[in-house]
Length: 276
Image 1 (spheres, rainbow, N blue to C red):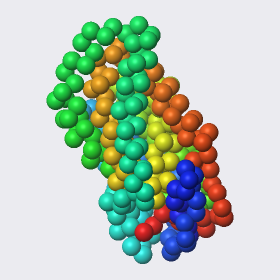
Image 2 (image 1 turned 90 degrees about the vertical axis):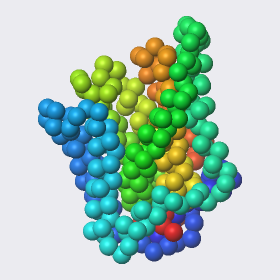
Image 3 (image 1 turned 45 degrees about the vertical axis):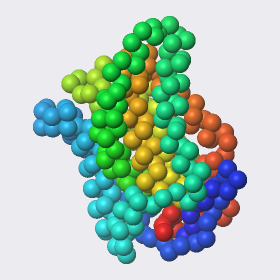
Image 4 (image 1 turned 180 degrees about the vertical axis):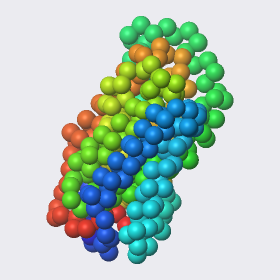
């Protein structure tokens, strides 16, 4: 079993480590259960209050991932949870923490260029942004433990990081589409920007996770940042901002792909990747 390390801006296979059971089949079942959960939480009346649905969709897939890891045995649960405190293998990866701010200000800049008024654009940002960051931090860790720490880790032996990001990006995006049903938090917003942005996030977050040597800690902080900078864009016209955000996120993902940072290099990973 091998892992990836960052070398000269590219991903290189690291020395082999002990293999773990599991694989594509388990990941597909995990993804199906997560999407099914989203359907059950949003299509069964008011069984789950709309305000709690985002938290259910963030935390319950983590329980699924932990259950699958427990079935694997051999300390898989311990290794999975340890990714939440695993620091990046190189300090340079901390620079990715700036991505959410760059993305948010780019969204504002494009919106202004398209005619958005600038009066009161950042009114109410503070202290709201501090509250939002705290609110999204734990859900971000939960999602990253499940979707990157568990799922990506178990796809890498059989496919490239890019393929893993795309395979998981689709059900992850579909899961978020349920939040746009009537009565949910994103009701009324267009669906295609959600699909585009979530698949793009999957690519970017998988790049950070794999390149940093399996650091859910860093990946979750970047994920929380993408959610936490929402107040910086809150005073933009909602539909326009929703589209601009998605297109810019896709642009970042395309840049990552074009740079070859998610391309498999070297020999096959063998069994499961990224363990410490």
